[in-house]
Length: 181
Image (cartoon, rainbow, N blue to C red; front, side, top):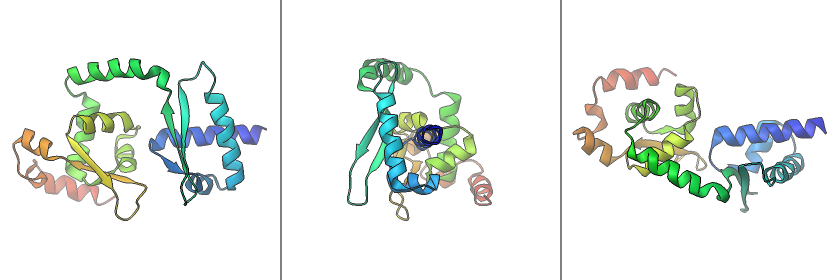
């Protein structure tokens, strides 16, 4: 049972960090186990999340490829987040939002995993906030369709008064540094 608990905890951590739907096959590969074990761990995790004292839940989507799962907040907390998000948009961008926006502007197109790597923290909420504000755009990576790439939007360029991201201060210097990683 301890092994099953570790697998459930690992899946919870993976889904939290990933922040987007993830294929069950990919989770199986990451954990170096079989699909039956992963599905059983997901079932246990889903039961744990169904408790009243938990704020999260799992969302499943079946597909011909085998299905995906995502960690999400329970609908019971929608009003809390609605108020939280409204307050967030009344305020100026936070330093963390500006940091993320700068990374996207200078390094874009860039994946969330790369942004998280550079920042050292999960950027899911900040990316969502920047998307809603229209400062960045997201589209599927043509090489890996389960990953999104982020880049500066036309609104951001307009707001900054530039025609293209290459006009950002010291753009070539920072773009060159990022390509060394």
